[in-house]
Each structure stands twice: as structure tokens, then as C-alpha cells.
Amino acid sequence: MSPDQSLDGKVVAITGGLGHLGRALTAAFEAAGARIGVIDRTHAPIDAVQNESVRLVLGGVDFLSLDHADRAMRAVRDKFGRIDILVNAAGGFRWQPLEDGDVDIWDQMYAVNLKTAVISCKAALRYLVAAGEGRIINIGAGAAAKAAAGMGAYTAAKSGVIRLTESLSQELSERGITVNAILPGTIDTPQNRSDMPGADRNKWVSPEEIADVVLFLASNSARAVTGASIPVFGRG
Image 1 (cartoon, rainbow, N blue to C red):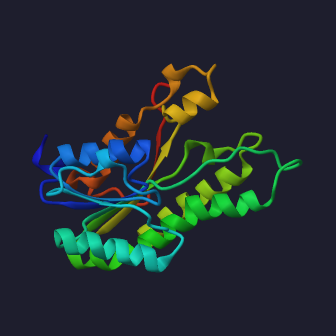
Image 2: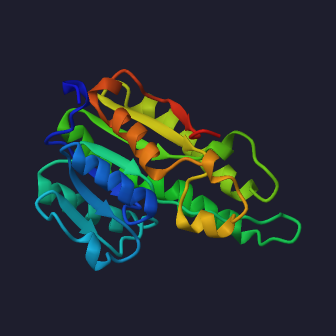
């Protein structure tokens, strides 16, 4: 690893950190020398609580509540003394056609995919600014570029993540904080394998491949990259 890609001593907060992508991100950041606040709505299973000198696991955090988010980010700062990087991996997916669907799903997709990112960014900003420089990396979706049938609510919310990324990158452009988004294709997770048993998984992207791109954006090698939304489609 080159000096510009080292994350030794950096502190990262990962929302959705107990999901499949969140766990891959945690492992990758830990291997790169970072200390990690793993934050999730679900409560931490026993096997997630380890390496306590470099990992703080916070379960039961509702990122639709600014108070919850503030307390979680403060706990990460109090544990490690700073926050340098925020990765917003919290989110959710629901497929449904509009004709027979529930319009409340549009509110749900907005809340879990976009509002959680807005609130976590707001809660972390004071610590990123205090650190003197920082990185925000949002997880969007490749499908946001063009919605397929039944994907309207999900892709509308993920499109909002792209607009949040662009706007916030401009807002913070003079403060040493870069803001970028990853737009994954279909992620190879147990849930997606169950939902799409006949799909060609050779065209999917692994959580570890996504984590590699996130680590690049978190590193000093990407110091000149901001406001970008980067497709990560694997071999599709």
C-alpha cells in the first residue's frame, strides 16, 4: 500500500455497519489501519464485538432521528478522539409496481435510503470539520441512472443520494472535505441470491469489490475527487 493510500490512525464511522456490505467495509478499513465506529439500527450479534481497541460497535441506532445520530457520532468521537471519514451504507430495497403497490413504500424508500444519509451527514459534519479534512462516501445504486419496472420508489430515493452528494460536495469544497458516491450494480449478498435464484451471479459485484473503491475514495490518493458518483458494476 502506498503512503497516500494508508489509513493508519484515521477514524471512520460506518452506518449500516452490521449488514453484509457494512461488514466488508469494516474488515477492509481495519486491514488498512483505521479505527472504526460500526453503527447500525439492528443490535450487534456477539461475533461483531471484537478488536475493541480499533472497533466500536453501536447497535439500536435509528438514523431517522437526528438525536440518535448525534449520540452515535459523539460516541465514536469520544472513543477515538476524532472522526475523519463517514461511509453511509445504511439503506433498504423494495420492489413493487405502482398500479398494485402501496404509495407508502415511496416514503419508506426515501426515509431509509436518503433521509438516513442526510441525517448522518449532518450529525458527523462538526467532527469532520474539526479534524481539518475529511471524507464522506455515500452508497447509491447503479439502477438510479434508469429505473426498471417496479423500481420507481427505490431508484427515486437513490437518485436523491446522488443529488445530496453533488450539493454537499459544493457546500464543503472550501473546507477540506470531499463527498463522493458509489453506485453499485447488483451486490452479491445472501438476500439477493435468495431473491434471484436464477440470476447470473458472475455479473454481480461483491461487497469486497465495493469496499476496495470506498477505501480509495477515503484515502489521500482521492484528495482531488469530489462530487463524483462512481459506477461499480463488477463484471456485468
